[in-house]
Length: 244
Image (cartoon, rainbow, N blue to C red; front, side, top):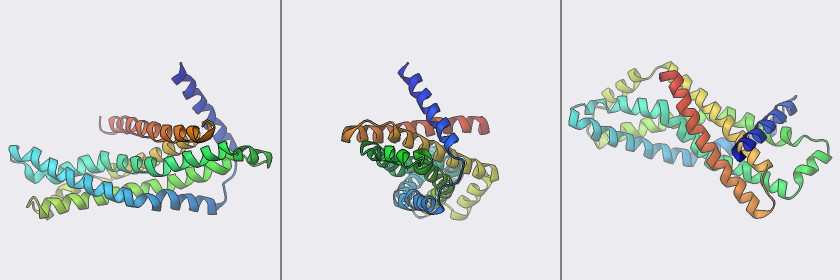
């Protein structure tokens, strides 16, 4: 019953948020949040994407070699990396970096009664605090997903050619023929949906946090856990619809 009550409270939060957004926030706030979410998440995203790409080549090579199909590593990297891993990598890193920051900032404001102060000044806190973050994350998540795709494939290609001795041209040809425009569009849609989930869940955890440092810590932890689990589950459902 507690889970059902939590889902109901989250639904009421989303409904109140939708009702509050009758106008756009100041562009400066949206761009500031886009910088925090996108640019500041790049270092960790690039690092994780590089090592995921290298491991895809190694594991694909080890799996296909006994079957004599080591030349198919490029296809494996394209199907696993582009279709599935790149959007999840981007979502996980943004949830860990930007999502926790959203939850903690709003939770601290709740602890200091700053959200109540916004209401006293006739400023809707949902519009002022959530809307710029939501617009920003929807703008940057597709770009971060593309960067994750490119970095994963580039790292895989480097390992495949320099370490495993595979033909680089054949590797890229297999990548190109294994995916099409539908796969890239699906990745972009996944990225935007994951961004919406991360923002709404993180902001909800911040708004409903308890008092004091313990409440802030619990809100931050809940934000990254719930966001990650929801994005992984949503990724499966989207893939089932598109490729099932």
